[in-house]
Length: 350
Image 1 (cartoon, rainbow, N blue to C red):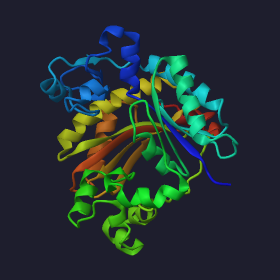
Image 2: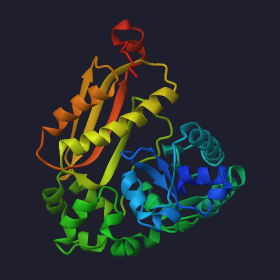
Image 3: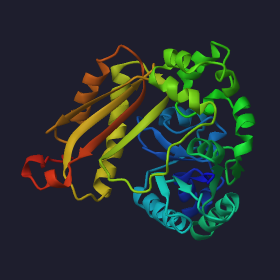
């Protein structure tokens, strides 16, 4: 049976909800995020993107680019409510739904006799009717291609990559479209005159592993449009975390510490709102360096406080003298058995 995967991705989800709830803002450049001068944007609408504004951009830079930008505070409860309504719609079309975040998910509709493109369009119409929001969708034989396809005709669009078209599609696809290829990796590839996946296909798995480490082996398949990952519809939550990949690498500990401050605020919001029936076992911080290597530092018994996160950051940053391209902060949840023990009851400090 040929796999048929749909990736549904809401268009500027947070900003779209704000514009829907306040119609006077619909034609205005809108961003959602921290409102202080040190804050960063979580997302923005397409009107704001015309000015070169994007997620994770510091507020002061965004305002410099667009002085009339409307920056609104994050309303997680409103976003979670809409996400729940959208998830309910997706579950009507498949019992194999894998949420990636509040605003995107995969569906496996391989066993459905209906055409996958028709199903995707039905989903988009239903989401618009129920929520007043638009969604884009990608249809393809695997998860990677479906996710690339959903971004192809944004906003409010649909793109289908058929099995027989994969080879041709991948040959001209820019390498930057592959999952895991960021700015630095793209520069490394461009330095070797590798611009498309077709160019990349001329390299062996061994050569790519030499260039990118373990990721090189994955890249050998990905540049050919090969992805065998299944849809995982039921996951036992093992952690709660937030992370951000930065458009410009962070060169210093001080720059990382500033980002940790805002990321920890997001983690606090999630810890306050997500209801789990287990105790927090560990606090952790994850860094991805400019060479794509990763390191994680975690500790049992630390108070869930920003100062603890900053202490973990200092240890993680000191492990490599390299710029940082991603920071993640989170907590590990205890197993149900361990939760019954008072040994794993840690204090959450505001």
